[in-house]
Image 1 (cartoon, rainbow, N blue to C red):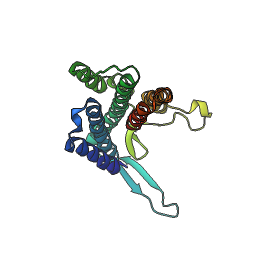
Image 2 (cartoon, rainbow, N blue to C red; image 1 turned 90 degrees about the vertical axis):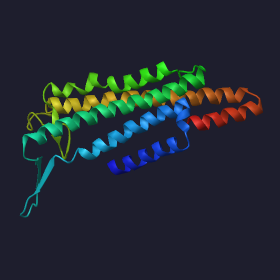
Image 3 (cartoon, rainbow, N blue to C red; image 1 turned 135 degrees about the vertical axis):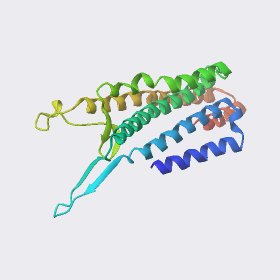
Image 4 (cartoon, rainbow, N blue to C red; image 1 turned 45 degrees about the vertical axis):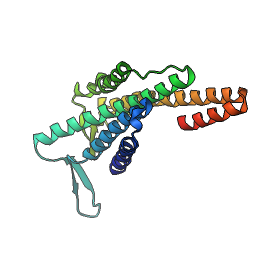
Length: 221
């Protein structure tokens, strides 16, 4: 999946640059999104490098996953987990910025395409995730979970009830995932809103304008 993500985002970046679509503000925002998604895909691929999988023998043929030997791998695993979490939030905010721009332009005809708007948006997309991505460092929660580096999900007590088994890391995993869903859900709502508004307008317009609205709606989707 990391390789697939790398290839698709490289193709997206290449197409935007090749046909010079970046001259339009919305496609320039998509270019920023593709660059962030490219970095995120690369980080996903790096998550498994610090893991050392030892395959056991015997009838069970069980395997054990640990960090590679050396303190540098513990630091590398925590750093990779932080980068993945940070880029995940940045990618979601970049998606939201594209959808918000389309919504404001399509519904209210407000063009947020000034250089100041663009620079502010890029800075916020890069800086804002820091407000959340640093939290796992408080309890050294970044580390190996399963076979990849993210937020550790060690259980406090395997014999306790379901509601008491979650460690700080497991709660962080659920919390971080939930927070990451919010900008994506808002993005979907904004695009859905654009669709509803365009459909409503198209029904009430003359035929020659109606075709333009349907064409614009296809481009938005």
